Image (cartoon, rainbow, N blue to C red; front, side, top):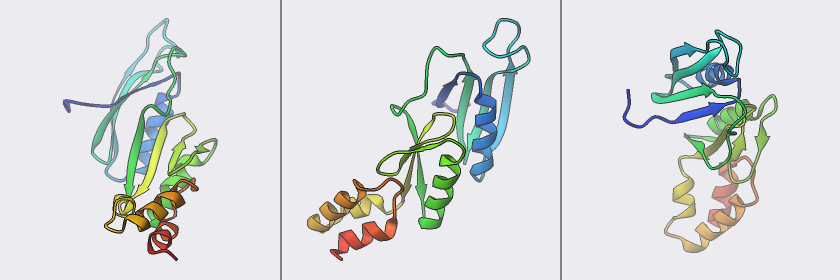
Length: 158
């Protein structure tokens, strides 16, 4: 087990969430699952705690009932090499009830927050050209899904 592992609380759909996330990311897999008995927030035999990997990152998930909700105070950040990869994750995670937010943030259909960002984002927002970085930041603040070409044009002053 890793020393530090994110642990996510779901009301009753943690197992569905795990299967969904593992299906999206390469090098991902389901690892373990324990079941609730009588008196749990899901029917007996339903998942209590599950463990899975997202591209090598261990994550645990609990069906814990309605006591706590996922919110934007915790998110997974996905570093994307190009626009196609941004589009893939953005579209998959907003599908079937996910919600777009600003600056590359979204909430998936399970309520988990994600940041879908290009690898180049830091370079464009913190580049040597201070005015270009300001323009790129201003452009970013107007976006939901990040468009790399738009940020690059803003940085270049086009």
